[in-house]
Image 1 (cartoon, rainbow, N blue to C red):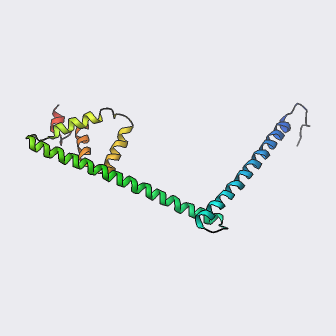
Image 2 (tube, rainbow, N blue to C red):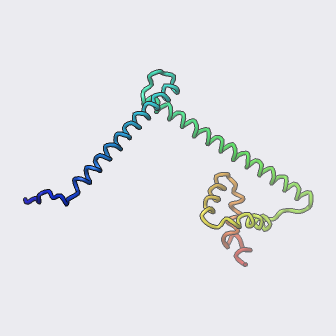
Image 3 (tube, one colour):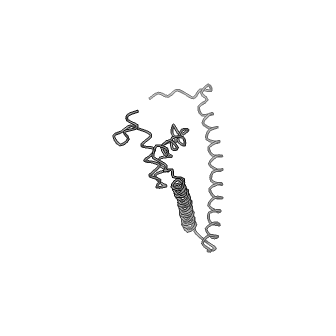
Amino acid sequence: MHRKPFSKADAFSVKMREFHEQAKRTMADLDRALTAMQGVLRKAGSQLTGEANATEGEAEAALQQLHAFFVSLRKATNDNERRRKLKERQEKSAAAKSKGKLDGKQPNAKHQAADLAANLKGTQGPGVARQIWNTMQRGDFEQLKLTNALSSPSKHNPAKAAS
């Protein structure tokens, strides 16, 4: 096998030397950062567990438990907010129905569908799927039925099919 002798015009070893030096500096910086992060993790572990010499595993376990608690808290908060909004909507709906009965007016599906159409006017595009999903999560199936009635003519909606 023949090898060409090293020529001064060949800058490969010079460029690789620069790259190697840069990589060594970067690796040293990363090593220092890792050591500092491990120290902070140990301190956090000793604070969370109450043990003076908590290991990294104990610290990570304590942080996982804390994270699980915050996730559960967020879910509970969201559920409570969703229930509160649903209750307010139901109370408004009941109040509107009782007011309609007192006035002698009964809201019909056509008026409800028109109101829903006005509310959904600016919702064309990628956000529609998210709104449908959110509506399903809230359990607001009446709104979904009205949305379905507006969206497509079918045998279930002869007025829409006739128009």
